[in-house]
Image 1: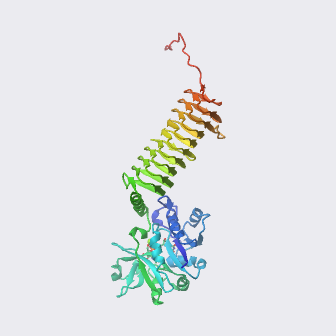
Image 2: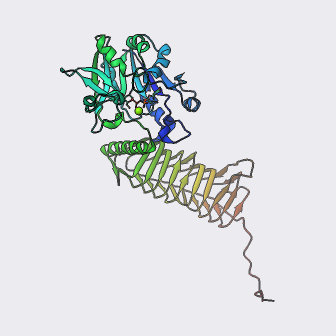
Image 3: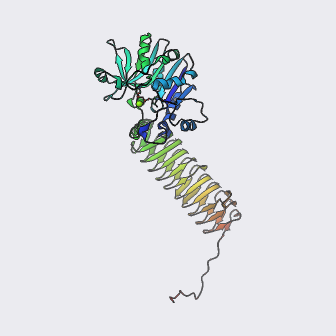
Amino acid sequence: MDVSIVVLAAGQGSRMKSSLPKVLHYLAGQPLAAHVVNVARQFTPDISLVIGHGAEQVRQYFAGQPLKFCVQTEQLGTGHAVSQALPLLPKEGAVLILYGDVPLTRADTLQRLIDQVTDKSMGLLTVKLEDPSGYGRIVRDAAGQVTSIVEHKDALPEQLAINEINSGIIALPAWALHDWLPSLSNQNAQGEYYLTDLIAIAVGKGVVVNTVQPSFEEETLGVNNRVQLAQLERWHQQQIATELMTQGVTLMDPARIDVRGSLLAGQDCLIDVNCLFEGTVTLANNVTIGPNCVLRNATIGTGTVIEANTLIDGASVGASAQVGPFARLRPGTELADYTKIGNFVETKKAIIGVGSKVNHLSYIGDTVIGTGSNIGAGTISCNYDGVNKYATEIGNNAFVGSNSTLVAPVVIRDGAFVGAGSVITKTAPADQLTLGRSRQVTIAKWQKPVKQ
Ligand code: UD1
Ligand code: MG
């Protein structure tokens, strides 16, 4: 059955105490609503997002993405919110309703819920909570069939004792939504149009309500304040850590890793404490990441060691390389196999060939280095004249002495040897010693200054 999805995201989220709409607060590197939209996309391109508070900001975040926006100008309840999307929904197939502030529902759970939908049945995602207060309660008859949902504020004392609650996530036939939504009333404790009233209507019309439980309670948890946001973030990180370990990655402390994006790791990788992975990061087999590293949109080859306190951003590193400690690889850096980048080295748009080394205290930008070259401590590629950027080219097996300044555009040819402390402004020819520094002199009969 075809499915359309409605995501409710019009609520204010006043308990966040924020100028940002609640659904744009970040969890694991993405806004809450983006998590929901992403899981929705696994089922259908037909996604309606009901926005209200902070509508423009939400619209802007999703600009360019295929989404139908429906503005709910007044928040008159969850039923009213879904009504805003009604004109955009097909009359056939299934409709799944998600909340923009419930970010971690898994696709397999939603699939099981959608599977409950036929012409004569619907699905309701429920969970049993130790403390059900605040939630809508699932009311069942003597045979155990769901008969209605009663909101906490409308519940009778004996209904308050029910600990099975409504997650709010439901799937139902589209025809039913079209037929029943217009008949909702707001005669209840909150004066709202409750989506949950659809359940009693369904039962009255002979549509069976089947419940589905998630694998984890956390899949149904919404974010109302920053404490809950932090708790869900931790739970999510724990899940990712468990998955990594299951796939053969050693985590020195599974409580001290943060993945804000996707981390793909081969077998026998070792990740030390306090590492942060952002965007898309890929580690081949046997990669070791030292403590306190940040890797963003990076690819690391087999057997490479990233030492402590290294930042890698938009870069690729080959196999059997060594980077850090305290290195910073900026976007456009491509390190080949067996390269070495040492402490306090910054690279940007640097393409460095097999076995070449930049071991200490250097800046290498807009530079191509061949194979087997050694760049001495404190070497700076002067790639910027304040207006334009220029390239530096260094060949194979070159040796650049410590504290050299390479004023781009400039070329250091294969096997060239640049003496320490040189300022190089012209091509350094192959296999020769080039010096760009004044000769050392000693002044005879020099006298120390004397106090006047
Ligand atoms: C709702 C359910 C309740 C369930 C609980 C689960 C109803 C009547 N009640 O209650 O049974 O246990 O969720 O968390 O549905 N929203 C709009 N427009 C509105 C109202 C809400 O877009 O006019 C959105 C909110 O942004 C939020 C979601 O719908 O994402 C749920 O709204 P909320 O006010 O939190 O509903 P609850 O009272 O918690
Ligand atoms: Mg709520």
